[in-house]
Image (cartoon, rainbow, N blue to C red):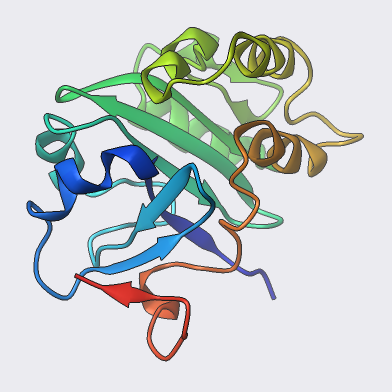
Length: 185
């Protein structure tokens, strides 16, 4: 059985800019000294909550998802726009690829051997005040095989390591209740 992780990540330094705009009772998690996560009932497996467009007016937000052996991805929202995104689905059948092509009409060039690859712009991560080294590491990760065959499961762990969000694991809105590290707004 796969373990699904998904939620919204911001810089810890932006927490005060955003917290007052989140609904009372929103579960939050300090991932590290640099990162802070919050979870909403509208978060989905590969679909970010629509409220992120509005909330990203206050600070940049990354929606992160890791569906263990099904795939992983992210969307960076900044000032109401998605400025970088990536969605990788492992082992899609030809029929599933056809369904996705129909859903993403005209996006044939975003599919590579059964994997969905959208717009993973490493430079967009500069909204999170990453170092030049971190952005260069992301560029290398996105330029390489982030999802193909050997090492396909390693790319997401490398991504998390580069950002320093390793603690974003085995957590989502439905898994926040009763966890002592979760705080509520």
